[in-house]
Image (cartoon, rainbow, N blue to C red):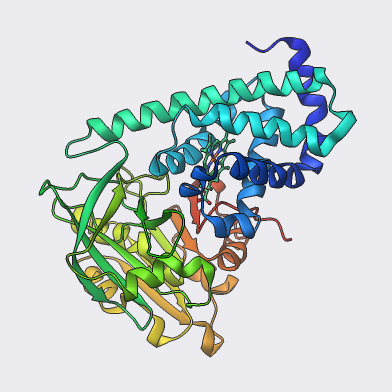
Amino acid sequence: MLSQKSIDIVKSTAPILADRGVEITTVFYKNLFTAHPELLNLFNSVNQKQGRQQTALANTVYAAALHIDNLGVLLPAVKQIAQKHRSLGIKPEHYPIVGKHLLEGIKEVLGDAATDEIIQAWADAYGIIADVFIQVEIEMYKEAEEQENGWGEFKNFEIVDKVVESDIITSFYLKPVDGSAVPTYNPGQYITIRLAIPGETYILNRQYSLSQAPNQDTFRITVKKENEMNPNGKVSVYLHQNLQIGDTFEVSSPAGDFYLDMESTRPVTLISGGVGITPMMSMLDTLSKNSPTRPVSFLHGARNNALHAFDKDVQQLMSAMEDTTYLAFYSDENKLLTKELLAENVLANGDIYVCGPVPFMKAIIPTLYELGFAEEHVHFEFFGPAVSLEPA
Ligand code: HEM
């Protein structure tokens, strides 16, 4: 239990930390990686360079500080982050290391303003927040391990097929090297793949949504080939150019809290931009197989026809369904998913799922709210660490 004094200190100093949160987490990461370069095997260096990871961590610590005496309200957010942590193999023993460098970051940035009393209160608060994460993650590892055909951290998979879906998008079908079946998952969930790429000092981890309905045979991921000059594209370019059928890499068990509610019978609208189509394909495939009477509207934006993946597959899956709408729009032709189109094509009284690049999400989600769709029915997932939907 945190003392009332520590609670008061943490709450009253939280706004100062929020103001300087990104500065603090930037110093924190720098010191963390100097002291523990091996942790670079876990973090995505591009998210660091873009500042997205710093902002995500700072926002979470700030939110946790504000609710330090009632952390239960943050449980949904904690679970979302813990899913990502679990898919990366984050362990309880990592938490004290992060705590030590976070507190040092606070001291370094705030200087004399960070009295011993303040630092002690934050150390106590961090301990409590870390415990919540650790407990949630222990449960998640246990669940993943205990699932039929499941495993806790990473397992070796082999590429058994590689299928071109558009000029820049290719699917990879993956099977466990040990010959076992793959576990089931919720349509919309992702896996982390872990690769040692020749010439790279550290192991690279990337999350990819599973892009077909769960089945015992294979996982399928569908990957956009990034520009070779884009540092964020290292894994995607390597997958496209170097990895072939028969090659292997490590895969986490499926994770993530963005998935189709399969209990619901409500209409479903699936909205995606670019390669954000991947979780939607898993959802649509599942709906087509398991609940073909559920009304579905599938709205997809791509740059142009050549870059538009899964067009035929969407039509084929829909041919087995009763009540469907399918709309694809190309930004190169100046066709965007406008407020009017959303008003016409998002199904009323339904569940809405949105996935795409950051500008797409920033345009679509607030518009859905403006149109009166309730937040509890709008589910979305960003590529990479979540960012604020507020205008910059
Ligand atoms: C991701 C918060 C502890 C490693 C994240 C994200 C947040 C976060 C908000 C972004 C999630 C997203 O993708 O949307 C926290 C908090 C912690 C904590 C509040 C402490 C209470 C740790 C620890 C480690 C760790 C102990 C291990 C050293 C990571 C990694 C990612 C991540 C590797 C993914 C980053 C990337 O690939 O860009 N964490 N975290 N975190 N966290 Fe933590």
